[in-house]
Length: 399
Image (cartoon, rainbow, N blue to C red):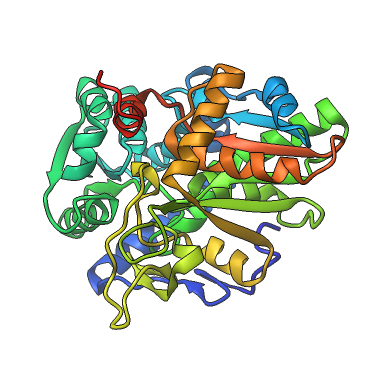
């Protein structure tokens, strides 16, 4: 059902997806696909995952009516899907718990992961601790500097954090190093990829584990309002929280899907991370999708005030949803994201991560154009304590 709006071949969403990897990784990808195909229909696996969601992760997360923000904007009713209240402070737990259980099922003895904002790394460190699996996390040096709190959290949880000095020293380069590690240690290592990117079957696996967000939105909306939302809004970097939000609703044509990308400082090369807005079709990290690249196909540097959106590509299914026009995407600048951040703090007492602050800004703009009886749901994918130093620096406050 979730692939109804794309022409689906195995491993592809329309023209996007695939497995553009060295031959040495193909057996590992086939092993992963076979293991996931078995696990997803195994009631015992699903029951254990649901138990961890409820009793360890704190699911279901609330669907909260942002009454004061709604009154301030004066338009559609704004609801917040509170993934910031999930264990670890972000939606990343949903996918990480599922993949870690899959790794244990496959007999893998070691978890590796990449991280940008640090939330995926923290989540992987958490589940490694609870399942007794050693964890190593690759993180760009630039991200380590701006997300030092999450680096400390990972280390307290027992993970080893590898500082990546190559390239732009951000998420793209962390993924590169994690893939190199996996190629070398594929027999005993599970690469726990954090977003709906990479070679098949990762985009499908991550989407499926994150779709708990959309399933809960659907159930909670029907219970609360007796109908589905008119508009769903989520931020988009690689796209895990966006696909998790959207997947359940792809066949509901009257539910509009809107993604907020990182517009950074503007439309110039190296000034943003908006792959769907200003990118071209290419191949990055094992999959065909929209990629920020120059005329020669070289991947461009990126920028975003939010480390979690600072990535030059995007998930293949989101690329297909753009092409089929089932979802739309807009670029939100750093300044606009800060406006969304301050609005949620001022009117609702919630400090969102800078990633979903992009979605908050877009939702506020759209709410003004909509009727009071219409409903918007924003996925607040993470909490903002990790970003306090960045926000303080942006507004000229010394901590």
